[in-house]
Every structure is written in structure tokens, then in C-alpha cells.
Image 1 (cartoon, protein in one colour):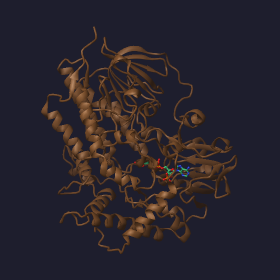
Image 2: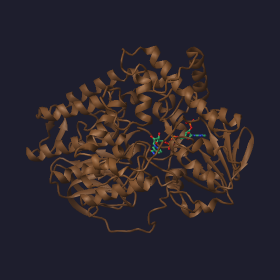
Image 3: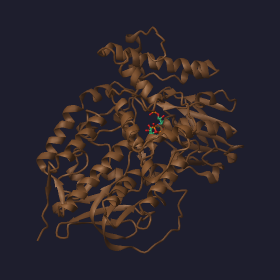
Image 4: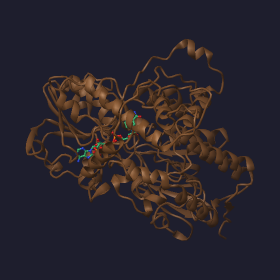
Length: 596
Ligand code: NDP
């Protein structure tokens, strides 16, 4: 144990308690309890950072590459393709700038929950050094803009534009992309970069539309109402009664700011998160001087290895993530073979220490009790914060614990829990994002591949890909994303690796004079089989978990099994892709001849 504390734990009793808490939260509607920001919820999708009157003429043209989306995935793949000499690259993005997650999520307190030296990609390529170990959102957003400038990606970017459909033209070997602004763009390569956790979701709580006060989702934060900025200073809330629904990673980061400024804050909790200390620090200039070229990639690799069960001589990042994972996955510190019981004990001990810290941080025993998480570590994304728990010691902040049931209903005046109505001026939804849903819902795009086959039909029972990146019947189409891929805790590392791999394939196709390329049917089938075969352990663990987005709110089907991650983990996945590239013959891919 890294802290040397031995704790007595009744493993069976705790397992029973975890199961009881999970059962309280299981719902028959599972993920269908949530709604996308469309239809009745479309009003929540207003972009507070874009010009609502923006207009431009439709574009009809030809280009080399179109990316669907403009976040880190698009910037990285576009940058890598620029390095390979591709000329006309069109980033097509719904927002009014690049940045993706960091364009949309501007709530106060938003910050990276993974170390910025490994989370922020292309630091060495574009010459950025983060100012803190855990950079705040504006700095990450500014870095994304810097990547776009560095690779000259702004000139051809189309903002406030949504890709709606793309049709494969086999004769021209081009995708014909149509958009919400009437564009018709013929592109050789189409790359889907729609991100992870990028579509906000609203809970289906009865009466939401009846609320007469102000309301928004955290990813559409309305500073014209709250005042202030991403550092806080929410002066508009001084005389306001504010309610927030949701206590995941987002809620944890913005609640301390709301507590500082609101006249009264009600935090409506369904499931408490596990909160570990953050320990942020400014970047040490002396440390920066010691860095050698290649340091950023090596640091990324080292972290991903350690957080996916690998052994390394040094732990370069040394933070909550690597500490915890070393502790809970190898309680003996790697000196003896790991036994299952020891791992279980370590995980339970970890959560027990988390609960004890809550007792120390929160003055009111009833509130402290309600803030205690009762689930296995990793059932939900762990959270890190040094002020969240202490916020509940403020006289203007009240935790309204719904004991796993969730908010009962919303009324014109406020929110009802257990028959009590809490009157509010502002109601904020920190209720998260879609996670690996149907591709057409995730991206808003329908693709028509060879012979007009719809992608939503090809993927009707779950995704079918080679390496998570390409799909048969849809030549020159690539996906950057978590599905059927090895996903790192530091998601930007996965994106970085996938974008380099895609750029390699495109670069090779250009070099070898291949006009259109796709996976063979056999290679796709083989990959799918390997995904299904390797999913067992992770599924069994998640099935024991309290519901959340990671386990599709506790409801599994074949579709979700197919949409799962690559079971052997990110290090193995990245190693496998590297071997594949080294082999050099583009195994499993085939040329698609032009139709006469
Ligand atoms: P989450 O899905 O993690 O949290 C949603 C919250 O809303 C949960 O607390 C959920 O409760 C609650 N909720 C949903 N419906 C109801 C309801 N009807 N009544 C009461 N509560 C309800 O979303 P987040 O936006 O917090 O985080 C999503 C992910 O985004 C994170 O896990 C992380 O990966 C990423 N992220 C990363 C950040 C970073 O790097 N800095 C910052 C923020 C997010 P319940 O748990 O019971 O479902």
C-alpha cells in the first residue's frame, strides 16, 4: 500500500452494500431515460458563443479531406495529413471555432482531469508548455486554436456548419458531402472526428419544459445570466437561488464556483462521485529545462502503460491516476503475482479511504454520509478536486440527496424531491453526454456507401470495423473514436495514435496510387470476432457496477458488446497498430477500383 495503512474490511458485507446501492438505481428505461438536445429539448442546444445571425453562401467544390468535427481528433489528423503534403483539408464543425469539448465546455472551473503535459497533444510540434499540471479549459482551448494556426487549418474550416450526409460516388472515387448550409463538397477522404462524450444529454424528468426560471446544460453555460467567466466571479448569481442536477466530473468542477457566488445553492444528487485530492501545481521552469526532444510522447506512453496494467521503471506523471492504479491493480507493488482477493481488498480499501476523507472534510455528519460513494472504484470515472467536499460546509449550500432515485419532477417554480419543492431562479443540468450511441445519433450524419448502402444499416446491430477505424463498403472513410479500439485513460493519447495511423494509411494510398481503400469483408469479420471474444472481463465488472454511462446504465445487448473497446487495452492496441504499419503490406485492406 503506498500509504502503508492497513484497514479491516468485511468484503462480503461491502459487496452486499454495493449491490443494494446498484439495485436502487437500476431503471427499466436505462439509457433511454435521457434525451438528446433535439425536439422538445432543442432550446437547450443554443450556442451562447456563436453569432446566431451568421450566414454564408453554399460551397460547391472538390477537396482532399473533410473532417466531421473540429476537436482534437480533427486537428491531429489534419495536422498529420498536412505533414504528409495533403493540400485542401476542410474541417466542418458545428461550433464557431475549433476545440470540440473545449469549445463547448466553458463552465466555471472546467479543467483537464488528466495531467496537461500528456493530455494536451502536439505540445512539442507547436511549441506549447502548459502553465499548470492540470490546465484550465481556456488554456486547452487556446492550444487547440494554436494547432489550427500552426497547420494552417483555419483557412478552409467551415464553422457553424453541420455535416448531414455523405454519398460515395464510385466513379469519381469521392464522398459527396452535404451540409446544413447547402454545401456540396466532393472529397477524396472523409474522416469522422465526432469525439467522445460530445453530445449533451438531458434527463427525462417530468415537467422540465414547465420551468419558468432560467435553465441550461453545463456545456452551453450562459454567462450573460450568471455573470463572470471560467474563473468564477459569477456576480449575476448573488441574489439567485440556483439548483444543479448532476454530480459527475462536470458537477464536481463547477459546484464550488456556484457555492461561492449563489445566494442559495441546492445540489441535487442521485449518486455521489468518488473524489480524490487533485494537487495542482504551476509548471516548474527548472523541470522544463531538463526536457529532451520526444519527452511528451514518452510521457504519454509511460502514463498509458502504467494506467493499463503495465510495468515501467519510472512513473513519470506520478499523480492520483498512476498512484491509484498501481495500488488497486497490484497491491504488492509488483513483487509477487497478483491474486484476485488482494486486488478486491485494495479496491475496497481505496473506496473506504475516500469515504473517511469525506468525514474529515464535511462538517455535517448527515451530509457527509450522503456524499459517500458505495461502488467499486472505476465503476464511474474517478473525480479529483480539492474544494468540492468543503463547499458543503458553506451556509448557502445544501445537498439534496435523492438516495439513488433522482429528481422527482420539475415544476414551474423549481424542483421536487421527496415531496418537497425547492424554488429556484436558475436550474443547471450537469447531466453528461451520450456515450457510444448509434453512429447517426452520435454524428448527426447518414453515410451512403458502395451501392447506396446506408451506414446505419451496416451498423444496425453494432459497429463493424477493422481496428475500429474503417468499415467495409465505405471506402476512404475513417473514424477516430473509442469503439472497437484500445481506449486510454488519457483519451487524447488514443486520438493521437489513431490520427497518426489514419494519416499513415492515407499517405500510403497516395504514395501507391490507390484511389480508394477499404477493409476486406474477412478482415472486418475477424476483428469483430476478436472484439466479442475479448470483452468478457470488462463486461462482467461493469455488470456489477452502479449504473452510469460506462455500463450503458446497466443495460447490455449485442449492439453494446460490438460497440465495446478492444479488450487487451490501449498499450496492446497501439503496439498492434505499430506492428501492422511496420509490416508494410496494408494487411486486411483492399483497393476499390473506380466504377466505369
Ligand atoms: P456524468 O454522466 O458523469 O454525470 C451526470 C450526472 O447527472 C450524474 O451525477 C448523474 O447521476 C446525474 N443525473 C442524471 N440524471 C439525473 C436525474 N434524473 N436526477 C438526478 N441526477 C441525475 O457527466 P459529466 O458531464 O459529469 O461527465 C462526463 C464525462 O466527461 C466524465 O466522466 C469525463 O470523462 C468527462 N469530463 C472530463 C472532464 C475533464 O477532463 N476535466 C471534466 C468533465 C467531464 P447518476 O450517477 O446517478 O447517473
